Image 1: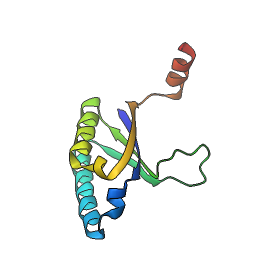
Image 2: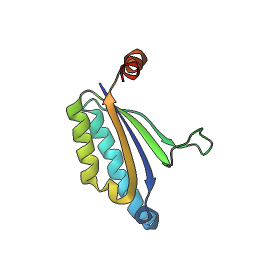
Image 3: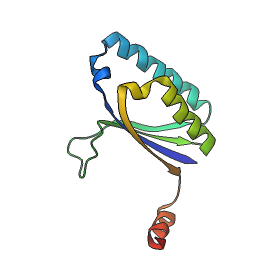
Image 4: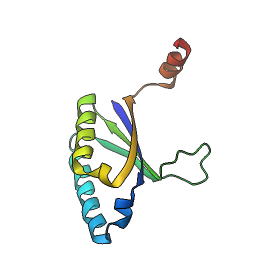
Length: 111
């Protein structure tokens, strides 16, 4: 299983778009999420980044996803790119194979 964390902030182009344009775009996002679930993709959570978060990232929003394998995760990344998402949002991503804390701790020690 792979985990992907997206963090994003709206760009001026999004903020300047009409409510109708935003609604239409987000309806497409909602439809894509339904289709992704049929491929085994799970939305863990979509969130607004709390203003009082300790060591807060600058992103306004973030989402956490799980994917059954790397191929599906990469296909998702390609679909996000093709959707025009990055025209509206400044975004960075984190992706990796799901591991236990012990596995990651061992990696830290081995550095």
